[in-house]
Length: 79
Picture (spheres, one colour):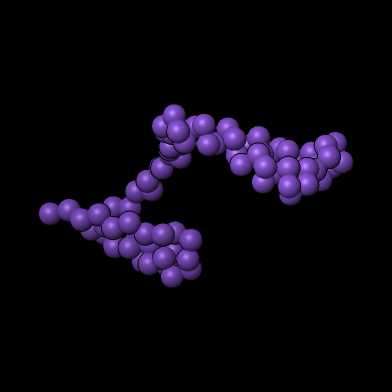
């Protein structure tokens, strides 16, 4: 019978346990490679992401002095 134990290898305790497990003759330790999975976005999420990135760029431009900020009345009238 086989068992799988997943260990968070970030802590000292986890690494110590891993070294102990490797010392046992009936234990086989293999490191699992995990690939980063980029989430797929639906069209609504993609649209929001584009608007958000554009807004962040606008904030950066305003802070850098490349663009003039609008007053609150203009923003509220736009809504």
